[in-house]
Amino acid sequence: MASCYACTDVGRVRPTNEDRALCFAPGVCLVADGMGGHAAGEVASALLVQTVQSYLEAEARPWGEESLSRAVRAANTAILAEASQFPACEGMGTTATVFSYADDKGVWAHVGDSRLYLFRRGTLLQVTRDHSYVEGLVENGSITQAEARIHPRKNVLTRAVGVEKEVEIDTGSFEIMAGDTVLLSTDGLTNMVTDEEVASLLSGSAEDPARALVDAANAAGGKDNITAVVVKFP
Image 1: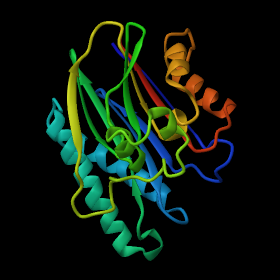
Image 2: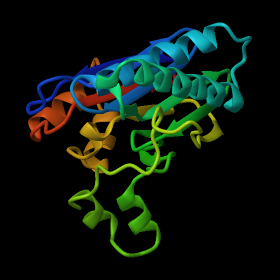
Image 3: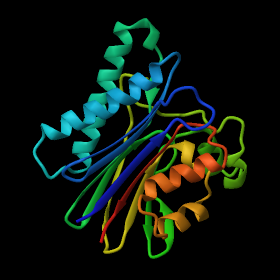
């Protein structure tokens, strides 16, 4: 049976935590990084998590890519409805990275710049693609990955949940192998901790690898909210 660890932290700079993380049975994990003025980002990420859980729990299993995609679309509708009712929430939105596993298969749905990684046999692979301005620059060759990490517009998203009536959602699946580890994280982790450091921590003996990753991001400065969900397969 897989072991799931989740940790979220406000970091060392931000006044509030707009990130959310959740693991619920059987075999679903998700992270969300909210955005918006006042406490609106907090509202958007909380609505995302609540709606996805409610939607999936009401739908027959097994949950496939389309199930996860429909759950994220339901959250998009819920966030837009909340924003239309409360002016202070206008313009809010959130990232969404959802992962579900059953038997030997993992499926995922993704919007924004939170990430899903697969750590297998000592190698860390980024499964999802960031929906961000700088990722577009990297893809067309304008800048390198190293330059993207320090680009002044690295936090500008090209897709988010709850911003427009229709949301484009990436989905995918992969076979789960014995000994695999899956990581879901917000950019508060990946902007502060290198892939090499992440791989080292995931391969280590930390009792709670999610907490260890968050602690590492805080030790590096904790400039944003930090969230990590780690799923270890025996």
